[in-house]
Image (cartoon, rainbow, N blue to C red; front, side, top):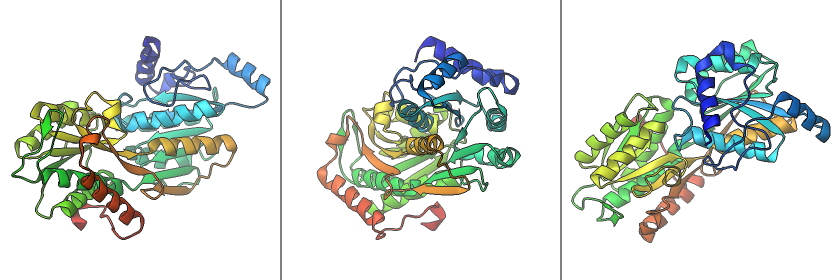
Length: 380
């Protein structure tokens, strides 16, 4: 990330409602960098340049506003996965996009409304990333009936909102089974190992709610399918942006016998990886392949990848093509390739083939309807 882009992004975060409209995008347009979250991006072109490009191509640029979840970009997880989707769309279509990183839930409404009110540029779509934006969007969308919105991880019932949700419990079942199988045997990889005399794993969530409980429920169910006698520790930190809280929670679990800890906590999960390295144990990432997007490949067995990028890309494509349908909801699971178990780049090859085969068999059973995964821990 170049220094100028970083500084502009910080400014957008700090100016508030009055100053947001009219700022050039932090990134966007067909000149953007590659589709992976780590590539460099160029500034969005000026309005004059956009007009010139439009005249030359005979088409009109589609403008999209991105309102990210709290925790911001650089999490190597949820927000970065969303950014990958809009970057890919910008590469393939005539799209310019602006990005906003709210510091708190109270700012969601401000950014949503500012994009909707803007006339220079006029945003064709406002993408709202994260379930915590649902309350604000439920109020914003009816106030701007001509503005199209999309939201990830929640359903907002409005004619101008397209909602995308995921079957996180299905993917979490697979990584839970993986953790359960490995903690039930003596397993070593890199500098980490399991304790041969216990079967113990952990789950660290961010903000407690219906969505994150789907991750927890699937993980517990998968772990128990691997070993009925397994102990599963669970806790919530109350934040998606506090690595220190994730580190403290995971350290406590490792000290209490956990061999593997899975997180669904955004940037807070970085602390889980730190604790795993310090304790010589294992961790499981979320949303993206975090063995690639973070510096902790040496402790990450796998990641429960959630294709937020697919949702963002599809909504952008539909907007460009004029086929965007508000008032609809799409749910993506294993069958739709919306979630997946992805083995770590360093440790994945060390996992025994018989363990992988069992996990693969469960994936097929879930897709075929032979296994029904609970969506709340109370159902287990």
